[in-house]
Length: 158
Length: 158
DNA sequence: CGGAATAACTTGACGGATCAAGTTCTTCGT
DNA sequence: ACGAAGAACTTGATCCGTCAAGTTATTCCG
Image: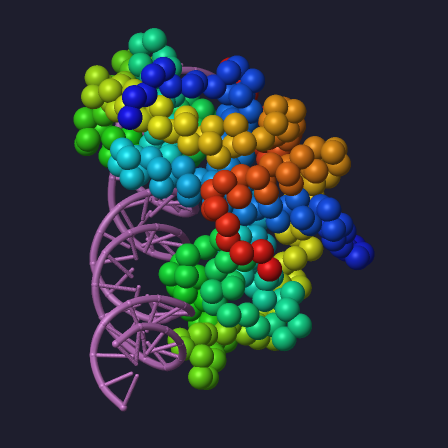
C-alpha cells in the first residue's frame, strides 16, 4: 500500500480525542473504585449480575451474557466461576443442547445487585448523565452506536 | 442517609449509557488489538512513547507522563521498566531534585512511534473521528472534559 | 450411520495492573 | 542544624484478563 502523508488529526479532532481517551481510562477506573469500595465488586462483575437481574427468571446463557457485556466467553467463564464461588450465581448445563450453559442469579446475588445498584447509578448520574445537557447525551448515544458499529461489523441485535 | 427511591435512568439515559459503557470496554480493546498486532505495543505503552515524542528534547518527568496518560506512578514505573528493557526509553535521575526521574525516548523509541503512529491514527479516524459528524465530535469533547472534571476535582492544567 | 466439522463453553499458563510497603532525597519547623 | 514530614518514585505480591488449547455435545454430509 502506498501510504502518502498520513492524515493527522486537526486541532479540534485532537482535543476531542485527547479528552475521549482520558475518559476511556479514567471513567471505568472511577466506576470500579466505587463498586469495589462499597460492595467488593468489579464494574464487570456488576454488569454480569445486573444483566441477569433484569431477566424474569434471572437466567441467561453464557454466550448471551458475554454479548451483553462485550466480553469474551473466556473472561466471562472465569468471572462466573468466581461469582459462583461467592454464591452469587449458579451454573446449570442446558440438557440436550450442546454445551450450552445457563447462569442463574441466586437470591444472594439478587440481593447484592439490589444493594449495589443505587450507589452505582448515582455515580453514573453524578459523573456523566446529570453532568451533561440532554442533547449532548443524545449525541453520546449516537456516537457510541456508530463506534460500536464500526468496531464490530455486525453483531446481531436482539 | 435516607435513600428514598433511587433516581433510575430514563429510557434515553439508559440507552446512552448502554452504548457508552460498551464503548468503554470495546474501544480500548480495539485500539490495543491493532497496536499489538502491528507493532507489539499496548495502547498505554504507545501513549507513553507518543507523549515523549512530542517533546523537543524527548524527555519528561515520570510524574508528568503519569498525569498525561491518566495512570498511576506505579503502573507507569512498571511499563517504563519494560520499555527500557526493550531499549525504547532511558531513565535518568535528575540530580539535586529529590527522587525525580526523567524518561527519555531513545532513537529506537522514536523510530517506533514514527512507525506506529500512522496506523494508530488511521484506526482512531476509522472508528471515531471520521465516523461521526463534526458537531458530535465537538459534543464528545465537551462531554469528555466535563466528565474528567467531575472525576477529578481539579488536576492542574498545563 | 459414521466420522468430520461446528458450537459452546472451560481450563491453564502467562503477562499486565493494582495495592501496599519500601526507598531516597528534600524541605520545613523549631 | 537536626529530626520529622513529604515528595517522587520503585518493588513485590496478588489478582485479573487474554490467548491458546482442551472438552463435550450436536449437526451435517456423504
